Length: 253
Image 1: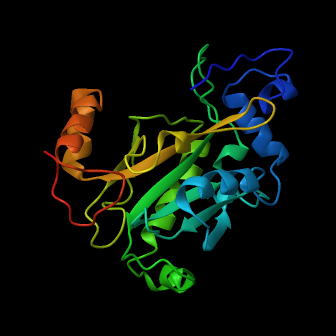
Image 2: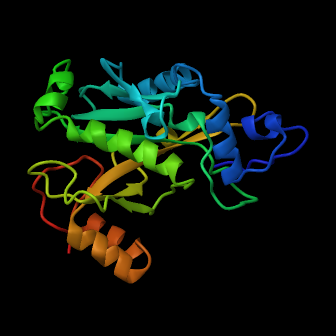
């Protein structure tokens, strides 16, 4: 990743506003509803992801800021079906990066902008019936709900995410019925090339794509007990756990 220098000559969103990067920016932007009706960088995100995951075949749209009341902003989830060189579905958000995250000040890297990605085996049934699956409590909708919930929580808490960070939902025992997973870890993709992980936009804005990998309760407890996810990630690698989600996989512990 290249270094990003903010200052008078930088044309990124934050420097254009003339403000430092902190939680007050998030609150102010939310209060002023500065988001567009559609994700601002959706076209660029689609073009970027299509280079590595083929053509998008399905878009699922939901309001991003529903936790804050009526807002114009939204997050869209784009579905890229399996291909000859990619025997898995790729799901990518567009819209999370419309607002900056709140990372600590960093002189080396711009960590304020992110989108989420998840991968699923080819047999997963992602299609137009996802809307009905949502209301029926079917088995295919939970990844969509997970990605949308993560987008809301990250911004609502004035937080930030990076490789190795974890997130869990205290109000729900699992991520979906019959799933077994209770939390997630954000990682670099094991199945998509390194070039996929970063999208540089005109003006200096740089979007990072973080892969969402579900974890079992014992795995998140292990990571929290260690105080750092490094040992958990080493065990996941030894167990062959990648960012292609496998329901029923053994725990890596």
